[in-house]
Length: 470
Image (cartoon, rainbow, N blue to C red; front, side):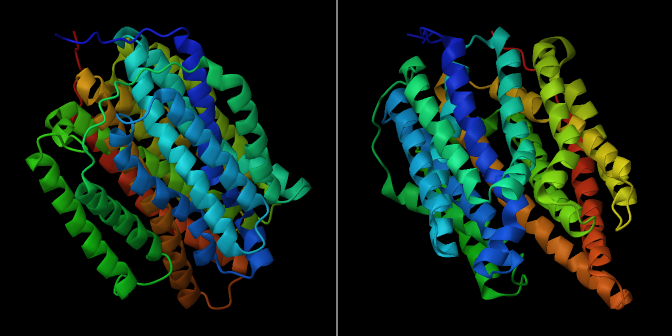
């Protein structure tokens, strides 16, 4: 007997709101510390490569946990997972806020990431279950707003907090918000998952952990070491081999931990690639621009946050429109506009990011770039997931979320690596230059690569087709 496509709950909108707000707080935490990295580096006497682990360590945890989420969703009820997610987030935030050393701060961040790693795939899976397909455009538009706005406004809000209260209060804010959401929001959650408690394949979990963990670790370490360093190439090779073995095992198991049959759907595969590129663009830019505005233009954290706010806010303006008109306009047109704007924004950054840049140029380039991002995330996700049958929703959500975390780690690590490379090239040619000029040159160097990635995304839109689902 065919299962109905929609699961009935008391309040679909209320349930979606609670999960989206929880995801927003978790994703806000993902990039909020970018604005406080220089302060943390000074407080704990660490360099930029070590401080970067506060972001990449968070992403590493998500990259390890999320592939297992398809299994977790079949073992525990929706309400149990929401409570566990909020609990991990609160405990991790408290540990980080009280951290007496960098090691304890990093442990707090990892526990925080466990909470977000449970919630993100759960959110996507629940939306696919409780809303009919003709409403998904609007709802996925709002989810796209959460996924892109939270990392984008994180540095803005964090900048104000760092300058007025100190970086520890970024975590205290998360504690307060999660406690309030837990007290008032959990009552809105109904159990929607089908609990089948499939057999736990330990080998699949081990291969998944080694594979995705090794891949993200190696990408993150590139920022500190060269590609020839054993820490980089050994973990990269081991990670790739483990992922290949994981894939082979999933296709040979009767009931796989993660059903990779989702990749037999061409629009899902293409949508996942486009989402990967979109997240790569977001998170590489999210770590670069605060460093540039503070280090090259010499603005305070609070002012740097305000400077980046218009570009970050453009997504909040465009996301509802894109979601509402998704079915009418179609994913192909929206994605083409999105990647074109992201490419143009990258080119504008190349011309504007100097040590003496006019503020309007930086703000204008940021607005164009993030306007493009608004047209990418939601259409790529929705068009891809719409092609999947209900029994593959949790697997599709897990795959997309896993690759988002890998994109985040890659974007952050590669951006820092290329920035350092650009600084070295500039200093070799201009040994008498100022530190502000060096930082500006390093940032500018990275945007040549970001423009190339946006161009690849633009070319991919030629192959997008509208998904028709009964």
